[in-house]
Amino acid sequence: MSLTMKIMIAMLLGAVLGVLVNLFLPGDAFVQAYFVDGLFKVVGAIFVASLKMLVVPLVFVSLVGGVTGLGDVKKLGRIGVKALALYLMTTAIAIAIALSLAVLVSPGQGMKVDAGQAAFKAKEPPPLADVIINMVPSNPVQAMAQGEMLQVIVFALLFGVAITLAGERGRHVLNFFNDLDAVIMKMVDFVMELAPVGVFALIARTFATQGIDLVLPLAGYFLVVVGALLIHGLGTYTAVVRLLAGLNPLRFFSKMRPVMLFAFSTSSSSATIPVNLKTVEKRLGVDSSVASFTVPLGATINMDGTAIMQGVATVFIANVYAVHLTMGDYLSVILTATLASIGTAGVPGVGLIMLAMVLAQVGLPVEGIALIVGVDRLLDMMRTTVNVTGDAAVSCAIARSEGALDRAVFDSDGDEAPAAPGHQDTRK
Ligand code: ASP
Image (cartoon, rainbow, N blue to C red; front, top):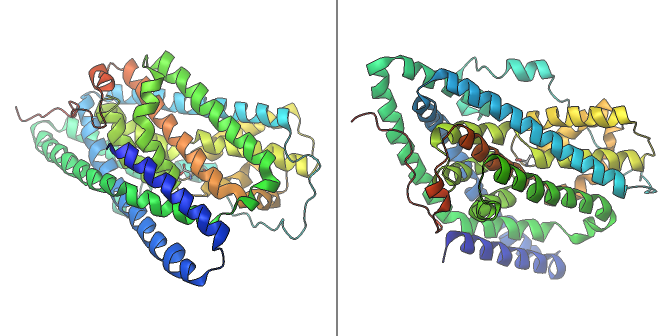
């Protein structure tokens, strides 16, 4: 049985068990203490921690190898510009879809605000200037220790460029990094083997603690977000994969299934980086010189699903508070939600915090966030799935334009494609 199949079955079993616990044993102290907050919590947390454990070493090592594999600094700049442009463009399209659908359906109209319910304390979003300054790490070790992904990326890029320019000595360092990359990829395999158990525990716990009763009053909002996620996930990415990457979208989605399942169950783009990077390189055929840069960058700044939630939430909250949004407001939502999604860290629930920035921009009460907190857990799982799929689709598009897409790997069948060429071995 393929790994994808195992994960899907585990997820299904977890969901069924979770729902049963939720329906029939909601207050059972034994089940809560030993399973929901015991076994499921421990196993799920260990699974997520072991994924996170690999993120910084893998991103750093593979990016150093990847940048050096480019062999040309100008090429790096070009890939960077393309990645930024495509990531921003897909996010803007995502919000435009979200806003259009939300305006069409108008969720939240006539809903009464319960004063007690609306008590959300917004955290201050960081000013944009700080976000930009913070991209350069003053201490790379600290950046790695704290998992500051943009800082790690910047340091790895500079390090890789320096290796390229350092001649013979640089090549020794590069060989070391390429070997290390292979070793860490093996560690990713270990964690992927754990996935069925980890996913089962995560999903069982989520469904055991998240009742459907929270969703019902917010069904309008919930369904509009899901609808926009589906339109963007299936429509926009199909177009990107087909038109820009020249690949078969069905095969793309089928090969992306394990990544999507990881994202769905962990709600974290960041924790999904190892699996996404491995899949994009080894199964979709994107050369690691492109993927090692675009995948971690995407996981950090490209959040189409998050932007969709923010767009729909803005319209929903405006409807609930009976605030009329002008065309200018909508444009400003597109702009701020794009920026907010860049600033959103790829960890669970942060999209909701960054929503405060969007609401403040159009003068909506930030307390409105309290209204949608109840369903955010489930929506987070779905939007994270869209977030990571977008990173992979854009990576394929960029790889094609750079001649770094190996169709033989993409077209090959099987759960695990034969090893892609990977980094050049410079020892020959
Ligand atoms: N959980 C999302 C992610 O990791 C971010 C968010 O929308 O909260 O991609």
